[in-house]
Length: 278
Length: 278
Image 1 (tube, rainbow over the protein chains, first blue to last red):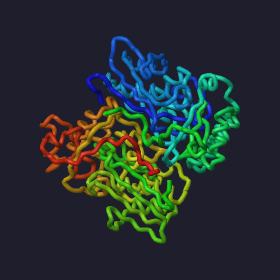
Image 2 (cartoon, rainbow over the protein chains, first blue to last red):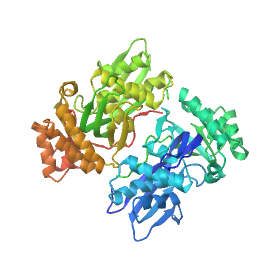
Image 3 (tube, each protein chain N blue to C red):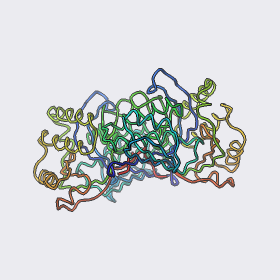
Image 4 (cartoon, rainbow over the protein chains, first blue to last red):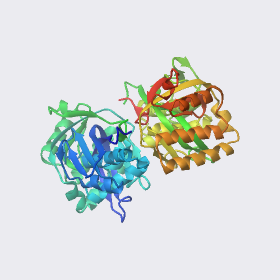
């Protein structure tokens, strides 16, 4: 709902454990298959009609192509201000959350009259075209522990979920460029992602998701350094940890990272998809 | 997750504003199209493996066919106990919420290894076969303000949503038998439901949903007595109210019923679908 003309929306963070890439001619049909966890830590985005489009993140002016593409699609000129406690460029889907939050809030602020699926489609296409994500938006629109069975926007894609919930911990050691990884050769990575997806769908539980994610990051050649050390430390302590795709981030179930001696951020599986603030 | 062997799940209540009926040979493809609101008031269902299946609702032993059908489908013998503040048989989808909550909790308690879509499908089919509901389960699995675009379980149906949130009030004056209404001739009702759905999809907002729901209940010949009086009183006071399908229940946005002098129960649009308690 709008507060005067302004409106605010929340989108959960999203860590992907494994994925495969599917590129097509159209952004709505392009995306990734795979699975991840949406997080109660997320992004709150406020949209206010304005003479000039400006985008702020945690108080600083930023250029976020997915956000400006969403505004263009809704024919909206607005001041967008987003706040998040999540680290940037570390695999939490912050650009996807901003794009989706902007879509929901702008729809309300400008009374654009689109449905939830329409808005998810606009945000998904904006992320794909900006090259900043392939699967975060549809996952963040669903909430929970999304399984991306078929890639793409709601009219084309298909989601399922792991029926589980609980505490999640994470630590970040830095960033990886999403566009460097998903822009390059993804054949090996996609083959590993397809195997993991099939195995998860046979028995969709959180511990199995974590084990398959660890295996994926090894097979994709992405697990090394601080991230590998943390994943191993959690495993040695009897916990479940994995690497977030794509960032120098480790996430764990329950108290996995704490038990291994780390000082993690703590959140939970987010039960809901992105929502407009009433 | 399980507490010992027991597990607990929450499913939101759901009031339908308008609908059309689609019957096919298979329960998974049978269902209703239409739209409604999921409510933060809902049903909490606990499932514990047991030598004998027993179902309790608010402490009393009850026979709920949709619940026993779900347990049969999961090959589970269990003590099910559900608690709710919602009135029974008054259009809040309590049987659907119990079926869905039982599916989620039993999957966890018995480590059945089904996905969210599998569990929604089991609960939806159980409701259809029991004759107690056609669209509540898929709506309660989604949360928010679900639009049921195509009927049926996840593999066949399709959902969208109205991107809005906020306070909801309700009063109940008694019950209507769902099976009496949806078991009889539904041609007139379905034609009115299809018109309302098309009109909502053109501009999916909450106020429009309420207006279309009022119109539907009139066209379907279901609006009379206390319910009609309450809907009119809210409208006269400048608010938005409609009748819940199928029950002697009026729901309103914001403070609609309070403003009209009623003493309603208060809840909110529930942002999430049914979830397992961690």
